Length: 217
Image (cartoon, rainbow, N blue to C red; front, side, top):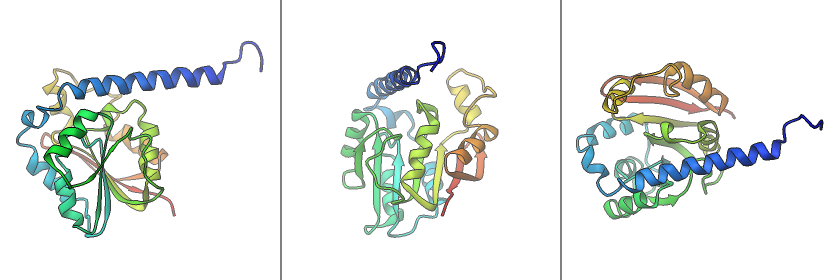
């Protein structure tokens, strides 16, 4: 290696430090809001139900709520897969998981875990539901690859938000930008590169929903 060549190990260490710092900021943000989170959005329940109904889950399926937060989707997922199915909820914020456990006891196995490093076996899931997750991922490529790892070929990924990108940006006093990862021209190639094929894309004031299929044999 020449003296001017970059030190890959130092670059990796720097990236990992930035990654962990972003995770810490995410935990801090949601920890402070966990107890009152559902009260801020009391009318979202029917929209979640409609999105989950569109997943096509069957009794006995295994499904993960990635970034489950307070667990709003967990009882809906449990109802879809029935008592013989398996429901997991993963979140990186302990306070959110505490709320999920208190509100929806028994609906799911709850995992305190980064969605880019899940304690789940390869190809064990039939579907992944991820509400409001993508914009909070420190490394979307890494996380989507991990979600692909734990999903069987032919399984489903649903990236969801109960309102669309424009409405969400307006809520936060921001404007949409061309580099928004959730925009279809940006999302489609990212999904393709990480083991997914985008099948359906909806972005209206009423909902954001990108549904993809796990590729591979």
